[in-house]
Length: 279
Image (cartoon, rainbow, N blue to C red):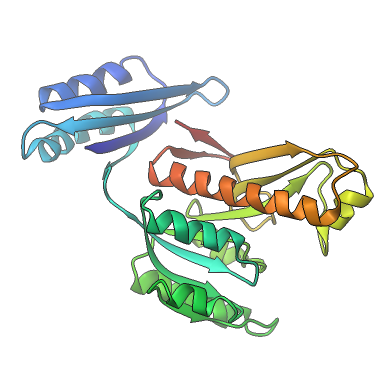
């Protein structure tokens, strides 16, 4: 099976044109979803289809080019089974990394991990025991450009598509964020109000926070301001101390990040300005 995803200005006949082209080329629609954004006038569509003959996908793509050009579409066809080559960046905290490695090993996430990059060495054993490359790339205020250059080389050499910041406690440069826009997913704790800096759970406890949670978003040059992919919250009260809040928060972070990765690998995320459309 394959996934067709497309976006364009909304016009009459798009759904019919897509369905007819698939049918005429012996491709059966297994699942379809679409969305019209009335504020921008943009149309988004995701279709899972099953080619019924050996060369159906190729015939469909050849014939669909004319339709796509007529509607000025951005479109892509991807095999459902194709694993997304993924590089994971992490610092010291390993709860998100552990969760990703487990879901990768048990095939819950359709990813091919191309390596783990860390600015610290403490997760080396965890990674290498699972037969994965571990790249220890320390960073200082004077070596940021050089270190990011090494990350870029790994991405290029491994043909990596997706980069996951699994509690990677470094701010990416504007160039790095821009060059890989829509391909870097970050996870961070999110509170109401937001607490930045050291010991956020202690800050939350001291302010009597009632909700804690996590947000997965695409990385941009503006720290923690990128288009949101997934979120989750949990209610807490005065009886939860900072350590308990941290434990709850870490569980949420791991789950939210895993869901964001899954949404990406299933080709459900459409970037739309400063937000995302999830189909």
